[in-house]
Length: 161
Image (cartoon, rainbow, N blue to C red; front, side, top):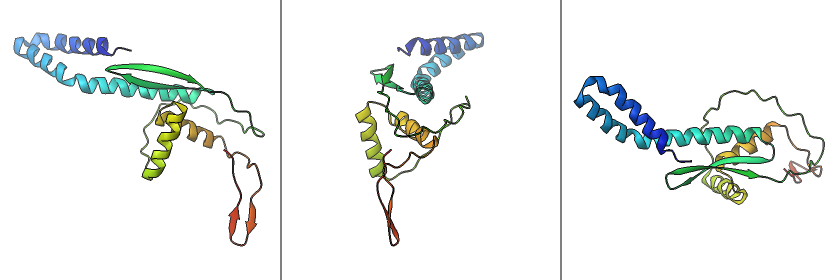
């Protein structure tokens, strides 16, 4: 998706708004339009990324991500093979249809690296991977594949997610 036409429209609108102010104001608007282009391009990319994340949360077996190629953004849909359910599936929480919100997440560098590797292995963005992981966790805990064993103060066993 070429973002240039959207940025040119923004620049033309800015120039049209400045036109009644005379040549000096028009020139200032042109300079401002060129100066704002990187910020506007970044804002458009963030809007596309947020839209892709919202769409991904609503898809069961696919994810949508934004990939940059030069100065162009591509929306890529990746189809995932559905996993067979391990047991009774808990009811999904109702979709609220609300707006997206930002969340600052702090984690150890080693965990961040691991998450990046897992997302890359699946061919999706870290944001899409985290949204999917949180959505899965919000559906309720999965049943463990084997009951844990207790030995004195420690609990041992394994869990399959």
